[in-house]
Image (cartoon, rainbow, N blue to C red):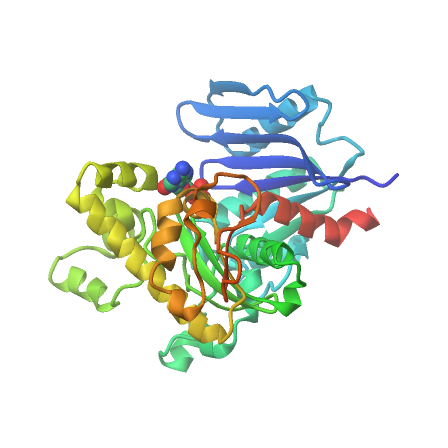
Length: 402
Ligand code: AMP
């Protein structure tokens, strides 16, 4: 029998998240996380789904090489080791695929070199992805390894949506355009939304609102992305946990000229100290809601700014798509914060979408409709599953041939 397991690796600068799935039924065999790699004490948490009992320990882990070895040892304890003949492939999340990668790609030396060439476009993410790939290839050089790109789903955007209105030569020289991110999530959720409506992805137009700590919206026409809110980097678009989202670019010149700030300081300000945390000192929506309930004006204003931006994008994407079948909420805030969903749709009923308060209040891990029967635009909550999407795309590419 051909192997059916896929290991999904999501390598960050100081962390590795992983899941082992069996693609016969898309079930999880193990999930885990290594954090604080390279720091004084790293932490590993590993859960084999057969028992559901997590094993957790802290010890120094010098680098990604050591982290992956530790993961392999934990998996081996459950009889799920990387040397298992059941393992069909490893799927790697890669943040930036530029214009070169429009689909999942089997990794060879040339592909790895191209991912490295894209590092200037994603200096925080691609280096860690490259390290993860190198380490995994060294451990299992014989095994097919696949890169699944956050940007790939957005490569169908027309030039009118993807280009900034700046000098074309300059833009081309520095590869400046809108790439978009969260692509595996937008792909998965838009497809799952079509399924929820009982239709094929080709037959529906969906607005996906991925609202996590990072947040982005996508307009998806017939299964293909036609616009998304993140741009050259994940900084553009919605108000996020710690990122500003859209802003007059002249704010940067002002901070340099008048504020005397360095480029790195402004980068940190806009990426790490802005958004909800910059507005009210808190980026967890639960805590913001709690503070609002206590009458905290700063938290209220942060919430209102977040919602104002979100509404603008919903309205814009209704205009971009012309007709919309569904609006789908996903990720940490989108899946859990009923009051965000309610406030985002409130007042848009004339444009088609509506939220039923009773349905919106139900908590569930399943995809579900929260709009009243007969709403012209359905509103849905669709839990995202980026790991499953990466595993599915990886297995579709290599699994059946291995
Ligand atoms: P993610 O990046 O998708 O993991 O989402 C993380 C964010 O989801 C957190 O920062 C919280 O703001 C938000 N979140 C998670 N659970 C809840 C909840 N029950 N209610 C409101 N927001 C939540």
